[in-house]
Length: 311
Image (cartoon, rainbow, N blue to C red):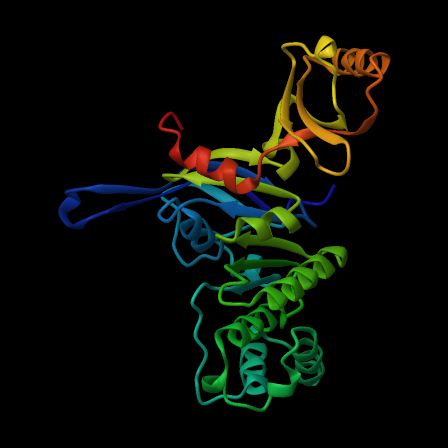
């Protein structure tokens, strides 16, 4: 069985001010496993520990306690990072370089073979859709173009794991969709993606699993569906339910969805109770259009978690 792309074991980071007057727990003991091939989204408010975790994984800072591995290799070893690409938030490239020269520079630093650099650069410039601007200096690039170049840079060494911090920041809606499609292509190629983003709608669309950090602690983890589905609650679209068929488990939500369709909220303790309720409605002459689990948006879940004083 292959080793996970990322695994942490009690990983934590504490900062102490001069003379030990105060302590900041940037990341509290974290146990987390991200399997190879996942698109994993890390969420949390500012100061939650997201950037600290990325810095620990990349060896930029060292843990106070605990350990972590990338593809089974300890993060203390430079060898662990040879298969990793990284795009930092608010990244900067030398303004006097062109886009093509920037990719060549990062390819050299990553150890990409000379005869592969040109081919790989051309492929990535085309893939992120800035090939027309490849020979312009990056100081003339828009924010969206800089993000695209940053993603190309992160992919230059053909990594197995890519860490992207706010990859769609400053990108227009069309560009966000193109980047989202690129991430899904990489996922289909078997690349593991680790995303930090405040654009929760983007995370909701692409991630196979997410985690939420709050004040350095992991407070939620699971698939988007697991985290956003309300337990035992269903959205029912059907024709109007007669008064005699209504009960405490069915609540009217909205009318005139399409023609004679209405929307109801249906509570059922289990699958058997759900089907029993539907059978009663059919017997009352109700025509059912659809039944689906009621879900809140990932944004609503995030706000609830962040504002919950008990977490």
